[in-house]
Length: 108
Image (tube, rainbow, N blue to C red; front, side, top):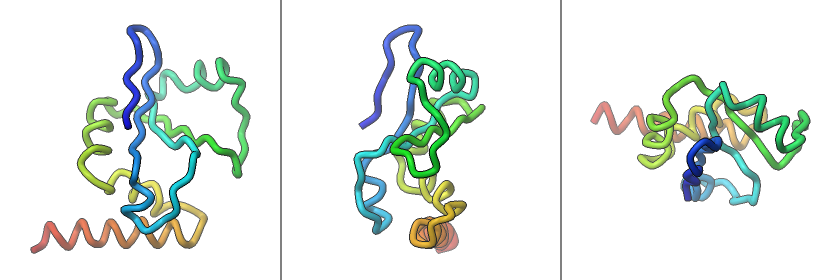
């Protein structure tokens, strides 16, 4: 599910059901993308603090959020790119495998 903000509010883009498509367990954690210009406001408004084991991962991007939203709807590549840099071995392997499959389908 994608959340669409009311006029003047911050937009968080996140994909659902990606974990299961990558062979990972689903969680209730929030992992999404928002405009880099909105990051400080969201962190302040919600009282967020850095926590490597926390339940919220916000990824600031300068890319147009409509492009990010479109990428998140089209498949697992956006999530796989992030997972490929994960410190967790299972997540990193799932990301790399998904990217390898995506590249393989382009070559075919």
